[in-house]
Length: 385
Ligand SMILES: Cc1cc2nc3c(=O)[nH]c(=O)nc-3n(C[C@H](O)[C@H](O)[C@H](O)COP(=O)(O)OP(=O)(O)OC[C@H]3O[C@@H](n4cnc5c(N)ncnc54)[C@H](O)[C@@H]3O)c2cc1C
Image (cartoon, rainbow, N blue to C red; front, side):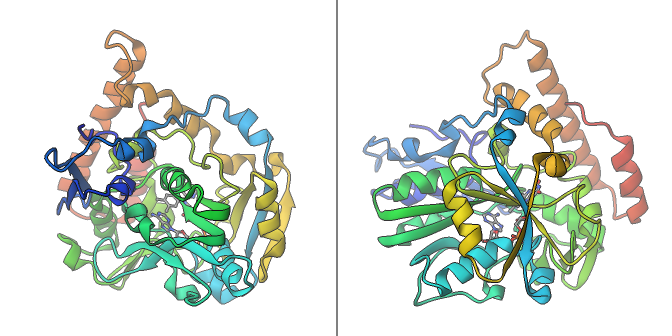
């Protein structure tokens, strides 16, 4: 068996499930991504890694409008302004995690915990005996994070909450099947995770030179209001400006993110995201919450310290970014190497890749420039998709 690095979503599940420790990996010091290989001498060809790998499952959204019609929508946040201001968006994710454990609704939660080594977070199984504080739970980490590396620490429990992005949750769901009586899943809406090169670029915009993981002393991609700021070693830049090039133009994206078509999560109970375009440009913080199931509805109802207000699809539609998601879905066959080289789709895919490569090269070479230049560049450069 071989690993195709161009499809890897960096969740770490294959490494965690291998009982023979046959999956070896090391972190690339330039882009921070895990390079995963199989030690053919140790491998017993059981196929567990292949089965759990989210890249082997199709997440294509065939009709996003129809998909979105079937959901319930809320705008919400933690009722404490200080917590809300410090969170990624409105603090709904950490409120559900912490208050769910405090109230005894969950006896286990698997999510991220902060660490002091790159990627500065790891997967952690919290229980009633170890309830995190609000500051223990990381805000959005946009460089890639192998959440599932530690999933074997998950203990049997009655009711567990798992928190992660689409790919991470797909693998987690499969892993805990039968291990916990009731599973609730909260999806962190995600269209792309980033490599460390994206972090270096955003730090450059903020006026901080980052060459290696060690140079990153204190960082935060979000927080301090909404949409908030990105800050590195004491210097910050508004999130809107920081995100426009790497996120808007899909630069330094984890290769496997190109084949994920459903940022809302598959078979999840609830999704939390930013209320882009539908909330005031700056504020204390809010989430757009998508409820997929009855369990999701229960979660919102039973969580203390959570304020939510129901919205109609029409009221939130702008934030759901249909066009971007449709364009991404259209290119999936190209990134999966499933389209004929004579097709228009193939030509489009090649053009997109070339544009991204060129932009990455230029933005890496150019010295840090005033923020207004990045704004102008972002407007001028049209996405080839
Ligand atoms: C890689 C990534 C890309 C995203 N892209 C978009 C986007 O394009 N549009 C949009 O509207 N929203 C996006 N989001 C979601 C947004 O940034 C917020 O995470 C979301 O609104 C939840 O906010 P909150 O205040 O409820 O989170 P908080 O209460 O601050 O809690 C954050 C939660 O996210 C978890 N978390 C943080 N980083 C990761 C990670 N890398 N992998 C797994 N879990 C993580 C933490 O463990 C914690 O449970 C993205 C998030 C991530 C991590």
